[in-house]
Length: 86
Length: 237
Image (tube, rainbow over all chains, first blue to last red):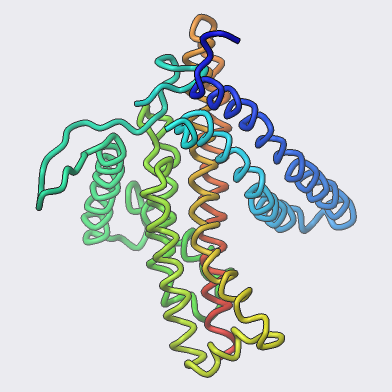
């Protein structure tokens, strides 16, 4: 452990934290899958409304994606801006 | 650019300063965002001037450029009409403007620019404009009493939570757009820098997804949510 400064340690922990932060992607993945599954069922029931269903599904999925993107942003900040290592 | 941990000097997606100048004792940087945004705005202005010129010589049977201009305007008006109903006529201009601006900004990554919307300094003002519009319309149509009543739903003790919910609107709107475009930019930068030996032709497919598809979806979502919030603020009157 010689030669490892406190800054190095903080950077290493930031990398681990960034990896942990993108676990936030699990939630939106499940949510988007559920939305897509229900949209597929809806198209099966009413094929005439396919375009409406698709646009509604995409809108909902894009909103559900937000929480995952927050995790991504935290990971980006930890890796590239490094607020803790200053 | 400070040293990233893993990828220092290899991956290049940061906002970079082009030159700086001093004004009122402040150091102000002109960055890549300013340059790319100027290019986007210039292309929009050129389109507008051409559209204006073709509309001055408008014909009953549109042809050529007049056709394109009418198509764009009708498409945007239709989108606004579809989600705002009778209030559409007042907001069609604003929604159309931000739609075209965000769309062109998002897909400017295709043309080798750094998308201006991958800078939080661009998306936060867009979110704040939406927030001001929501607030203004709430006061205008529901009056101060209705606004205060809305804050105290369902019980007065919930007011702080409602305030937080209102303030979170511009933040979540702008962060959603920013993070989506930034993630696309970062992934394209990773592909081009780390896989530079084998990145021949196939990144085009990634461009179609990250720039065109994701950019268009996020543009649509931003405008859709703006319209939904404004319609909600206007109420049933």
